[in-house]
Image (cartoon, rainbow, N blue to C red; front, side, top):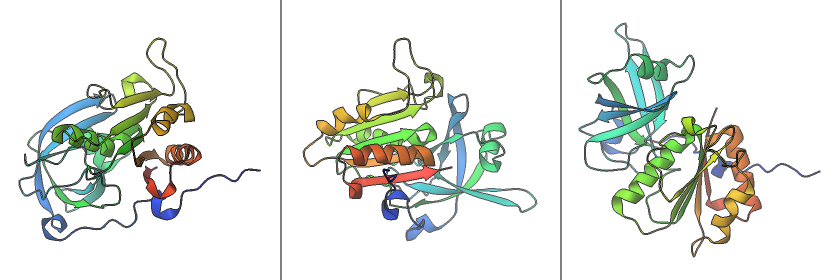
Length: 251
């Protein structure tokens, strides 16, 4: 009987979220300036944060909603935007059934609304753009990976970067309009005419790992618990060093 692979804890989870010194540990007021629909259940929200300290692709922020009666709800969300000096950041949120914060954003939020943000937080999953990156995501797990793709493009970085992204169908593929030659989509339930459909397999990874860049890849995996376990098993079985796999999971 083969024992199931479980990644070492220090690679499987981002660890305790830490807030850095300076403005990153202070709540700031952010103003919603735009909403863009990505899929039937996901939308991107653009926020103006004049005092934003900047971030690295892959980092999070803490977001706080406050009701008139003093009730507050806090969640942490991955940043979707590339680091820049525009004074704006973007989040992409799935509508979560029964979710207080995502429900408000999808049902009630309008440009001009204000929320509180703090960050950036957590550096475990950050990619500064200094090493070849193999990005593997599923569903909304692609959000921090898209920050990396956008950073790579905006800076014209020469280090190799590739993205494998899994979605149930083309209609549920977040950021579908933005993907380029660096991206390979995998559809698990329905796909374009003639395209194979099914779960991500070793065959999707083989061309990237067999013909990888000198020095190999730094692998970033983000998705549900089940997807993260599946993708990490595939990577390790294909020879990716465990200490070069960074994983964020949810659900």
